[in-house]
Amino acid sequence: MFFELRQYHIKDNQRDEWVRFIEDVIIPFQQSKGMVVVGSFIAPQEPDLYVWIRRFASEEERKAQYAAVYESEHWQTRIKPEIDRMLDRPSMTVTVLEATPKSIIA
Image 1: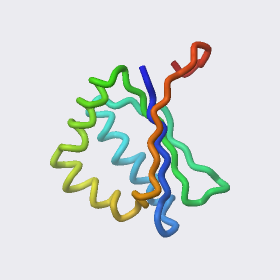
Image 2: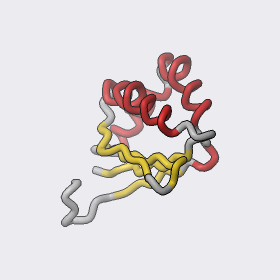
Image 3: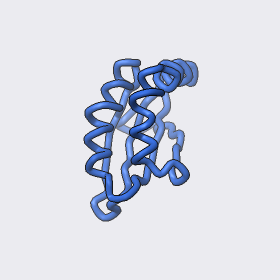
Image 4: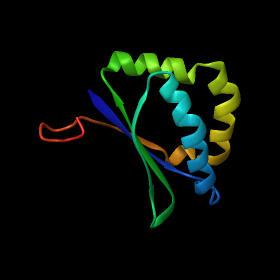
């Protein structure tokens, strides 16, 4: 099992709109394709920062879920255009994490 720590910076003071969109649209859609979202966070002292964590059982599962989500027509035509409008993609970071033996999240 491993996790993705995804850190995004949101354009033009749109974080509240982004949070509504990701929680009402993106996360439910990804969950419908089997993705596990462990948490969704904002940083009160960084008004453009949004962070979330997803969990995968294996690299094979991650690849299958990526394909199911990101290659779907729904993602390409309805979700991605909204993401592109709000997300500063060049500043996005994705870090793969493995839990240590005593981590309670694993």
